[in-house]
Length: 209
Image (cartoon, rainbow, N blue to C red; front, side, top):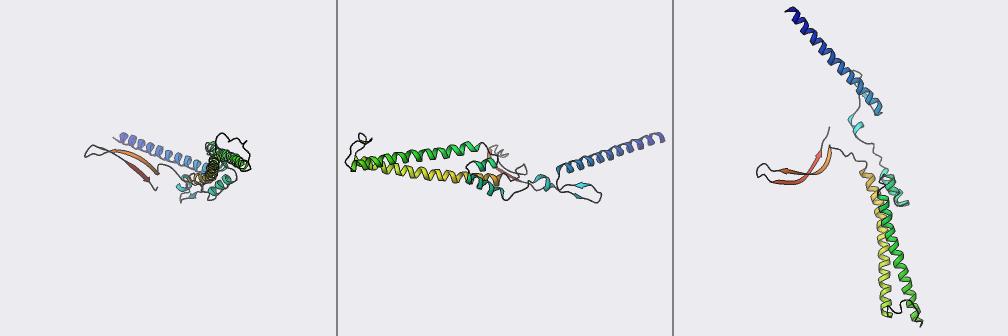
């Protein structure tokens, strides 16, 4: 009976020793990870280094980043998107602005040709390029239409330029948010237990650790 009791005590001592060794190893690993993270740390009474959760999970916020992105896009369209590392948006920016500039130039050239032809007709010449296409009244209407399209193209191009700046600014804001499972907003589908019908909705998760 005494031998069995001694064996039992010996096994318990071994288990406690193993458990203590495991905790000690875990503390050492945690300390190494904290040192590698280079985050602000504090010490408790026992001298174990503890890293605050906020310093690990939260990203460092740069309040000037949105302004910088907007400024870069104002200087050169697409530069703010490159600053935000949204390189795939740069071709879209230039395609949109290029289309606006193209239609403005095309309508402006057409307006200038129609205006010059109308001036020649008033001067008594009948050799303009629109002689077989438009009458005098038709040429006046063509000038009005081309001038309206030219102004509309310019307005759209300026709007696209402003949109390029706004996009860079908003992207810079959103990139600094901490998006994880503790803060999410997503659709869900649930079966009602009473009538066995499906319902569709939105779920918002907001967890504080």
